[in-house]
Amino acid sequence: MNRSAWKQTTSFLLLMLGCVRPAVAQQVPVQEHALPNGMRVLLVERHDEPSVSGGWVAHVGSANERPGITGVAHLFEHMMFKGTRTLGTRDYKEDQRIIQQQEEVRSAIREEEAKLRAAWRRGDVEDLQNPESKSPRLRELEARFDELVAAQRELLVKNEFDRIYTTAGASGMNAFTTTDLTGYFITVPANKLELWAWMESERLLHPVFREFYSERDVVFEERRMRTESTPLGKFTEAFESMVWTSHPYQWPVVGWPSDIPAISKAEADSFFATFYAPQNITLVLVGDFDARNAMELIRRYFGRIPKGSTPPPDLVTWEVPQLAEKRMNAEAEANPRVTIVWHTVPFGHKDFYALNILSEVLATRTGRLYKGLVLGSEVATDVTTSPESRKWAGTFEISAEVREPHTPAEVESAIYHEVDQLKQEDVPAEELQKVKNNFAAYEYRRLSSNMNILLQLLFYDGLGDWREINEGGPKYQAVSAGDIRRVAKKYFTAENRNVAVYTRKPAPASEEAQPQS
Image 1 (spheres, helix red, strand yellow):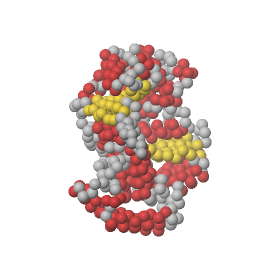
Image 2 (cartoon, one colour):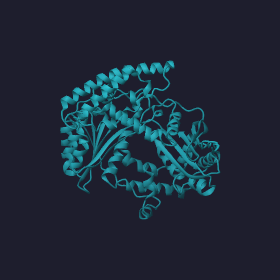
Image 3 (cartoon, helix red, strand yellow):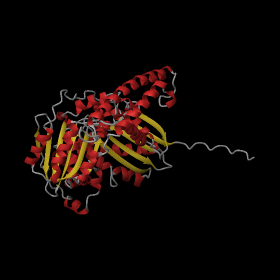
Image 4 (cartoon, one colour):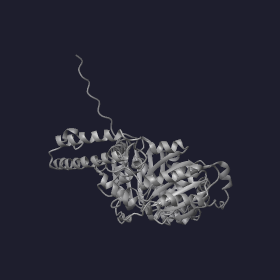
């Protein structure tokens, strides 16, 4: 849920929802269809403005990867904007010839890289990333590959996909990748719906993954900037990996640094054929259109895509029960902090709703954690909660920044005190109703725009059931104080928790004063 939306609810809306039983939120009128190739379609007609927000979700994320190709799902988020047979190049045949030559050189490069890794295992090479470790043959092959890249760039029409959309008045084109799904979306004028259908179906039917290896390097740099160059990025990644014992959630969406530069185009092509097949995709349209006409366009364009020959495999590796507390102690160039994560439930589980209500009892400026740790004992400067129910499993996180000279141990103890209160006593009716009113307010705000509805449908469908957009609200309102007490006892146990304690890294010792000459 979007907690910022709950915080920003207007006083008028809170007044309207302040009754004992909040009004039933308006249902989103979703029409569901299916194409013969297995692709599903969700349509929501809204004639408030002459535009359509369109998108699609591929039911694939980093959890569907395997060691060796971690990061490939996120890489495809980038590659899907590289064009088609007709978009992105001045000469498709020559473009394909160069791509084939690039693959031949990359195959030889991979052989040399395998030799380099073997030398590293023997101890003959100290640093695989050091350019001086490369053999003369590897340097020669890389130089040849760079020549082919330069030749291909002479043929490219950069950003043509975006330019065509922008010229037609479209806006907000973007995409995202999570552990469980990959979504693509844009808003187009209502009279450009057929352009959307052609553009989106073409990049699924005739994609061309140009600049594959260059874009792979872009993703690697993105990882460096967001993870390795931030004060807590590397530690957060290590902690996340520690939380999960057996589940694929243990590797980052962006991928491990050794895997990203090792992914081959052949591996990527196989991944695309499996997980970007129409039976693994759901289209979503929200806005100013006639559903019958829209379906005619969708059948004409997306119906051309043949059904995939290999059914996407189900995820069968589940997280094993955690039997003992795990702890990570880290020194970082940041303020002291404590983060606690408990294993909980996946999206759609019956306890999902009580855990989200519980989170709001603890969170926000009026929640128990802020009142107790920030305003009360003043052991923390800030505290947040984050219930995260993914497709296959879930977690509940509480994180607090320590107010010095207090210690992380004091903050951790204070968090457990507030959590234990939820195990021992029912949340008072007035406090619980206030939280439920916030959820009810969100039920209204979620209908604020076409794009807002679109993104909810993409996420919910990707996680397992788009009907959550209509069915979730009543389930939150049905949560009782007993439910909150029950889930607190069930999941917030010592053996089920993971704790990261961050202390400030000491400043490097100053150099001794040098004698003056």
